[in-house]
Length: 103
Image (cartoon, rainbow, N blue to C red; front, side, top):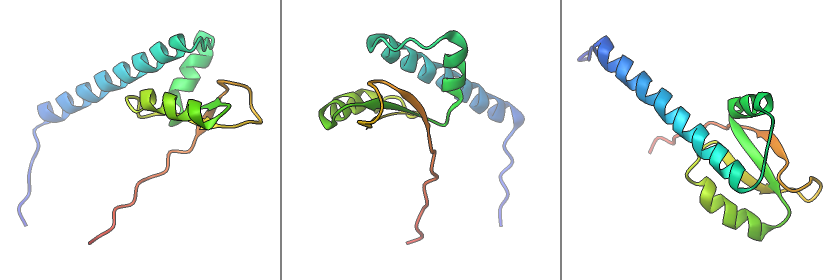
């Protein structure tokens, strides 16, 4: 079996790109929170951004459909209907792993 050796400089560049992507995704979430007038404190926002998935509660399915179109650009953000919570409650979600089926 052939072995591929990836030079450290390429790994470093990949890590730097991942960091930049993470920062941009956080900026998108902050921008959407601003649009929706969701204003967590700086310390709460820092904790929220560390969650694997950020669930944002809404009151009906129509809102979910509209807002999930926007959140499609933010991989860690999802809007869900939760009638027992107030509008725009932020909750941690489960980040379930995708399973690949061997075909």
